[in-house]
Image 1 (spheres, rainbow, N blue to C red):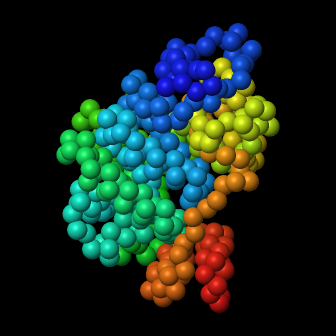
Image 2: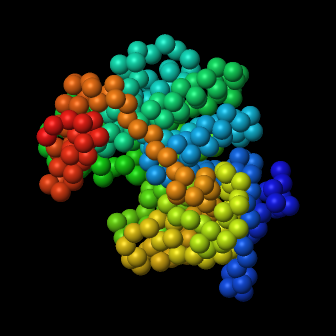
Image 3: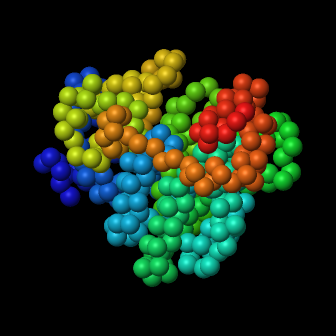
Length: 341
């Protein structure tokens, strides 16, 4: 597969081999690649491809993930999709659902409603749509090529969580539990997986509070190709021709202008030391889905806002968060749903 006169496999070979210090100093412009071909090629030399979601709920990243998962090349290379937006407590429910069995909706919705995040970031309709798309793809595949969705969130039982400390114990397990799932269900079985998580879980060199998912896997010798979905920054501020790249595109960072740029360019925030590292030390490629001004977010349905039982559940769970976040998130939910305080 070629794009802009560049062979995808050749570009990935350059990534695997690395570049010299001199080449790094004289960084070249990054070159856009056809992203599905690039990700499929990455599985030839990596056990895992980690794909950052970008802004949680963004529709452009979601559209790409649907296209990727529906592509025949993907199902020939990948066995599993590990997701942040599902509680491992309901893995059997997801297995039955994606295999085509009839599953009551009251059971299915617990997959994304009962993750450790009290404010319900996975309640936006794009996440349910993704699970239904996997089910549809599997219906057209022979059994040996069906995709398995692995739920990465620890199996919290909300019926037993009564205090902030009890919630915090589950929150502390988020990355370690995902790594355990990947090791047990993917690597130990000689399978390949796409891991779809928020990007801060996927950094190679995260803040001082310890390695995330990619860091832990790579320390144990697992080969990971790490993709950052760029929804926060204008790449053309670093490389002018990026504004003309096809949407979506993927670019290898090693030895390029975009790779030499500080990671803070991709994840704006306080410029502390770890954000000042070159982007190519944190991830291998950005997925370009358009400039930030074009990014749109999936919104929770008004039907859900009108569900009194749902709103009571969400506000109760939010109340268990710390004294700073709980009122902010509760107010945000009420304002979104036009509810009185």
